[in-house]
Length: 626
Image 1 (cartoon, rainbow, N blue to C red):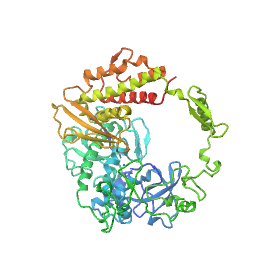
Image 2: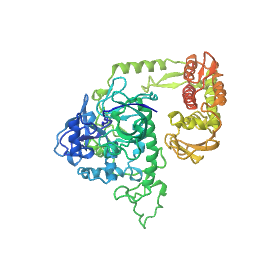
Image 3: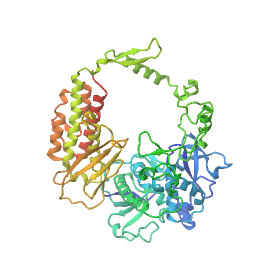
Image 4: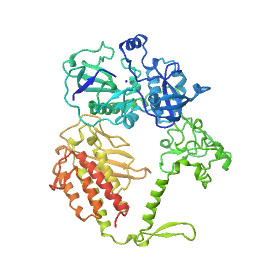
């Protein structure tokens, strides 16, 4: 684990939606780049002397984007500070996504720091906290979903290919760092010990700029130097300093991602601990006791954990049975005028964090699209973004080609002007090609289940996506390729639960990503059961898994045998284009020229089989046959 670092270095974010935050000077009058490091030694000394770092250097201001102008945007300040202020033009680099700005405010609130401008925004933080479970703005989920593959860096990061990345680098490299040497201002790195997300680094002494920070453990001969007295030194471990992302080359991207994943797992533990502690007023709503005279039995507590208004008559969500809804304000009537009157017609009418789709933008007073029964009375010319002659012509050609398939559909309604295509009744006739693809899809389903009974422990121990997603990938094949007529699952799981398994193994509920939480007994094989939950929560199937401590990470002879089972029926697949596509998908695990299986990590094997299963399932379910 070694690489190179150059002594340079600093923030920002790219807009995504309407409600954002903008970085500005502490007085709020001038734009400010919270990620930019001083350009000279004199500028650095001046900021050090005035302690102009973190919230003393920059502040957040809530804004809404009005329009984009190339690299800049026009924004309007919202909230109490926006009264009487004209729209202003700022760079995209000075913007921050809404949720990420809440993480900054949440970090300030938890730190106990005295930040003069925080009082103006604390009300927004309290209001937003009410929207989330346990009143927590969860940073672990945000880093996992939004920042694991994204580097929050300075305004002028240049990668190894010479490309400039202002503030965010969206495509991190996935190759291990090469062995380097210390020379010409470059220094070898032994490892990245810890990660600090930008909202925490912004507040920490020795950091103070808004970008990812890493505790760098330097390679010999600097690994024994005590840097604790340095400005960015770390007293936790000899030979380490805190460095901003801009100082680290993209050669270290694999180490970056590893440090971020370790931080996410630790932060989840800290968040669970916080839910058990007493929280300050306003961070979590307190449920009032039900009225004594109520005649209706109260809802079960597990269904009404978050019910700040203590509403008794909640309506069940259509797809998520564990979620309930209620009217915030009952309309006085259901006439057209009442619905139109209450519908948002400009960006300021939307709650913080939300806005209209762009295009088309906010509704006009004459719009009727908000009515369930509307007939689209707006003239087509009013929706200019829908006018695309090339797209319309392409769509018409596709429709005409499909309608010309006389063996599949028949045109109807030309006299009544109803105009529709009727499926012919003989589509269910026996079809050898369809049967072969159906059997092949079921075979891949069975193969995934067989491999799940011999998952190598060695294949789970690496800190890579191949290892961490191995179980969820096999479970995905199992859940999506079954036949409902035989009681098998046929849905994409939205939740993974470990019903019975080793104490050291957990699965992230949404992604199914493996989390190792304790020391692993490398000699012990274990059985475990996981539950795969569908979107309705009523769809729950169990999948049995066996972890084999003696099998190599490639899956050994078991994976080889199962690969051959998948390859064997390929000559019978029709049409030829489908067969060639599946052969191309199988290339990472099977050499068709030499007719032999390739030894790859079982995570690669599982991902390949998932792609093959998806292709076969689409052909089977979609009747893609001549």
